[in-house]
Length: 621
Image 1: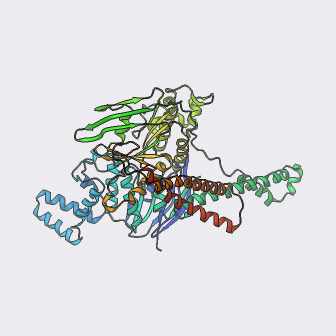
Image 2: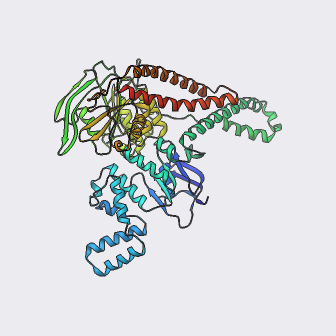
Image 3: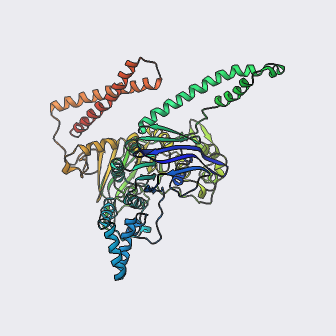
C-alpha cells in the first residue's frame, strides 16, 4: 500500500502546557484510523495541524503529492450570508467551482460569461454534480437549497459541512467529531458510507460504536505520546488493558529492584568513588521507571441523590404543537421508580421540547402532569450552562451551595468538589468564557449533580466528553437509584443505561419499545422490507401495552416463555462468571483459555437470539 501521510516528531504547546511531543506515525492508503484520548490532550489540534489550518512548534507533516484531502472541523465555518447551496459549493473542488460559476453567470444574464461557464461545465463533465449534491443534501435533511446557513441548527450545519466535504470526493478524509449534533439515523448513514468508502480516513470521535464499526486501526494519545493498535475499538480496549497491566508489572519490578539499589547507594560515602559509574547511572534511570504509571486523574461521580417516593409522576393527555408541527398528541404515561428511559428520533422531531414540557419549562396546550412531592429534577441541557460567562468557575459553584453533600454525613467544600471533576485549584480561578467544550460539560455536570437530584434528565450529555469520562458517567447512571431520561445520539451510551426507549416518529406519535437501542435496531432490521420505516408496534401511545392487543399466548408459547426466562438468566450468569474469570487474571492452560474464550463469544449470540424471542413472546403476555 502507498504511503499517503508521514508525521515526524510533531510537537505542540500552548504557553507552558505541552499537548503532545515527538509524535511520529504514518498513514497508508486504505487505512481507517480513529484517534482516542482524554479531553485536552490535543486531538483536534493534531487534526488541525495535519489539515494545514494550524502550525506545529516543530516536526514535519508530509503528504503524497497531488492527494485530495477533505477536512471536517469540529465546528465548521461558513461564509456570512451564504445559502445552503452556496456553502455546499464552497470548497476547493474545481467541479464545484465550475458549478458555482455557472449558477452565478446564468442568474446574471451575461451571455458571454454564461457561454464560457457552459464550456467549463462540459470540459469537467460537471452537469450531474448539482443533481448529486441536491440528492445528498436531501438525504441529509436539507432539501431547501436557498435556506440561509445562519438560520440552521447545529445539527443541520454539521450535516451541511459533511455534504460539502463528501462532494469534494477526497482520497483522504480528516474528520473531527463527525457524529456530534447528528441524530442516530444520520450517524448510521454516515457510518455505512465510511465503511463502504475507498477513501483513507483519520478521525477523532468519542462514539464507540462508530469507532468499532468503521476503524481498522486506533491511535491513542496519552501522556504526550501515542500508541498504535491494529484493529477496531474492541481490539484497542484489549490491547490497552494488556499494556497497562504490563506497565504495572514493570513498575512493580522496578520498585523492588530500586529498594536494593537504594541500599547499595546509601552505603558509606567514602565507598562512593569505588562504585561502578554505570550502576550509579542505572540507579537514576531505575528511579524514573519506578515513578511510572502516573496516577490517572478521572472524574469522580459520587454525589448523593435525595430519596424518591413511590409516586414519581404521571402524564395524562398531554398535547403540544407549534403551528402545524405536532410534538405530543394525547400523550399518557406513568413513570415508575427506577425508570431508565432513552429517547430517540430524527433532529427536529421535538425530543428536547418533550423534556422541557415534562419539567414545566414549556407549557402544554392540554393535559395534566401529576408530579410526586419528593421528585427533584436534575437537568443537563444540551444548551449548556447558563452562568454568567464572566464569573470564575469556583464562584459559579459557590453561589449554588457553600458545601456539597456526598451522603453518609460526608460534606465537602466547593473547591474540593470541583477537583473531583478535574478542575485543579488553578483551573477553578478561570473565567467561564475561557473554558473548553469538555471543561464546560464537566462544570455543567458538576452543577447538576451537586443539587442531589433523584430524577435525572440528560439532553445529549455525551457531546464533548471524552471516552474515559463517558464510561465513568455510565457506571454512575447504572447505579443511580432514581429515574433517568436520556436523549443521546451515542448508541453505546444508550445501550449501557436504558431499559426501554421512546421512539418519537413525528406528528405527535411516540412508541415505547422494551429494550435498549441495539434491541430496537435488531427488531427494526428483522421486519419485512415494506415495514422498515414503521416503528415497532409496542404501543399506539407510550404505554407498556399495545393499544390493539395481539393474540394471547398459546399454552405451548407460555411454556416456552417461562423456559426462556430461566434460560436467559442462566446464560447471563454463565457469561458473568466467564467475565469474572477473564478479569481475575487467573492462570489457565492454553486449550482451556481458548475454550472459555470461544464459549464467551458463543454466549453473546445465543443470548441475543433468545432475548429477541423473549421480546416477541412478551408482546403477547
